[in-house]
Length: 466
Image (tube, rainbow, N blue to C red; front, side):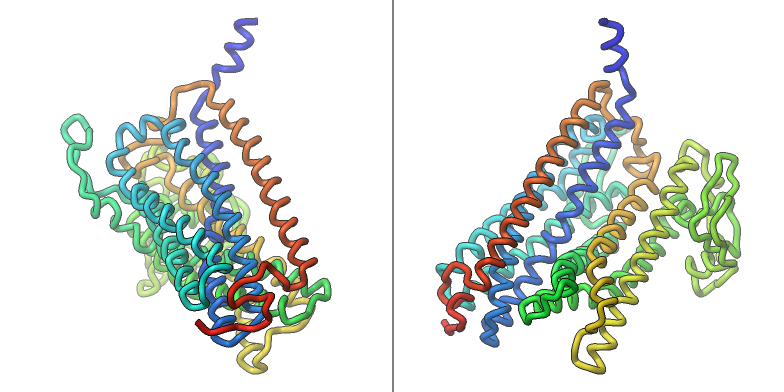
């Protein structure tokens, strides 16, 4: 019996540590776009309500702020779990690099606490503050959401481009430059990519809820406005995101050639490299399947040189310094999914923009609304795929070219138990969150616009100036 239990507990901790981190990150990232963008979208409705006496806009702003508070609280729980996991799953990483890696998280903590304070002020301010002071109390929420996201991305960017520290002969950190850590070369583009993505994903997620309602026949002004505000934000952000993504891909080409080779499925260094749609890398270094578009990968990597652009292949570094064949295929497929989803969202946004430009109205067809209903899920898939590209593409490194994942993980063979515990916790948290949000939605529908009384608010059907 003892040997049986020992066999169960004696598992390789590295795959379990990676699986737990991947699971918690993918769950937490669902809430991040809402945490960053929802305050801004709410403020647009709030401004319209105060400035133009729009009752429907005020109802939306008040209700969105309550939803925002729920997702903020749940995000705080999932984010806290992630913080503990750095020490639990990656003790050797934190022991080696914690002095540098922890600096951006110190700033993230400050932004988080400030955001929590102003979320409380804004929520309770509906019943206690005059219109414009209350509106301005919401602006710090949007700013802190961006600041917190940028801080976390700065830490992740540092893992891709470690800088701002000095090592002694034993490899220990002896000096840290906080600004060098935060403003590493990868940080500006990665942070911009994530922040804009938050507005894309958050806008489409919120709008998709109202699109579903409109498909079901709720074509009243409340649902129309609830769709228009977040969808417009997302539609404006999509082309910006594609531009930033292109710049970031160029940075990866110049600074992380192995990751770029995985993205483009390039086993051997060459010019005139085709763009392969899907396909897979075999263990023998050959590529099979997929659709190859001649020369396109080289053209995209450096348009000025066209097909003469040389892309460094995976064979340029030893096998132990690059992702495995399976990981390369995962990265490449994730890239295709991310780019393909982004293009579909761009086409949907262009459809919306063209109709609005010529008719001053949103598209009314059922097909458009069905596609808009799916846009939130599609945008989230694109974001999740993007994070797979970023993290799996860096393998086998946890700190690029300095520390491998295998050398950073815990040696505790019972880590699989915490993974099961986290899955159970997150399942319960997800169920509770969905239940609360659905209950709030049902109550709001019963109230039919008559929320709790506020000094200038929705139930008054008027807006009083301060």
